[in-house]
Image (cartoon, rainbow, N blue to C red; front, side, top):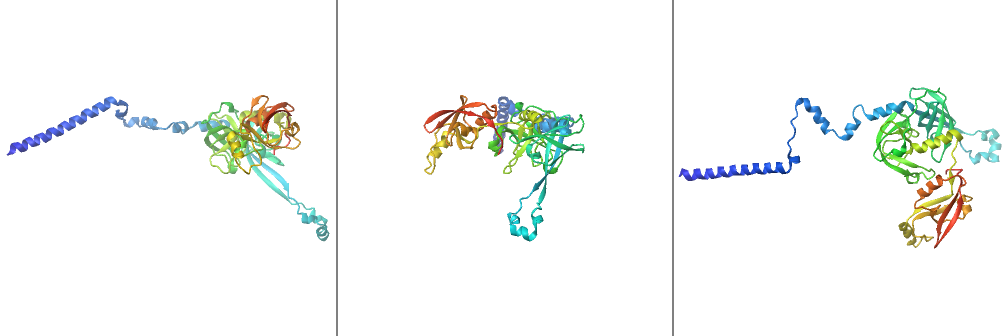
Length: 404
């Protein structure tokens, strides 16, 4: 009676042993086929804990570190970054009622002559570009200011004299008399900047002096038209480093502490998007402002829109459209400024600009850059499509007098 039970138990035991052996063989074969996935974790002793942490540390954490490149960059340029305070007195318009003869006869002439005034104060940033006391900043920081005060990081304050302003590129140069041994911000090159590079913004946002924010270069050559600043002629560096009111005019640095841009603008309807003027552009403008106090910009005198076949087709299929547009690539002329070079040359509203001096023009930004790079008084050969015909027109550039 016991033998059948024993044999049954023996069979069950044998089956379990075979199953375990088969599992071991399968595991061994897996280790041989996939050694990189099946490699056992290394044995870490108490003394090797730092090695394990270093292995698990992300590249970003390794880059930022405790004594980071940001600290070194800021230390290299920080003493050259300044705060700029401005004051401006404006006079309010007198109510026309005060000029009424009856009112003046009743209250007296002296009452209407009391012109109410208001004191406006502004805040911005800048940085020293020459030991003699030349400071670069934004034009909108110091434009129309009656008084400019420049405060250094060490607490010293000096009265600033505006040497030149260029509204078109939003750049200005201010001079302070503080000796000839001032700290100077090292200027880099915006030509070498790439998307994804570190971007460090330094300035005085909202009045919080000596503030540093860190981000990356989000994109390059973001046109002022895309940003929504139609009266400027710039291709911005876009960054996600925090830029707030008061940062305007301060430097945007690369990871080596070199100035690659001038913090200029933010979009109020977006988070984490700021814009800076490339330093290579700023260098050229600053040299002209120091020499002449202003910069002459050539212009044609047209309001324009980038035209594509799809955009033209949408217009042409609209039964309420007042005009039919050629379904081609080019720049559509929306308006011609009276008494402008374009008006004198015979360019009309509705024309599509196809070429300038034989070079194909496919966007409004491209046309603007071509004109900006031309000389004052230079004659440009402009090919336009007007209806079903093309015409060649000669346009002589003139100096832009008012950026707006």
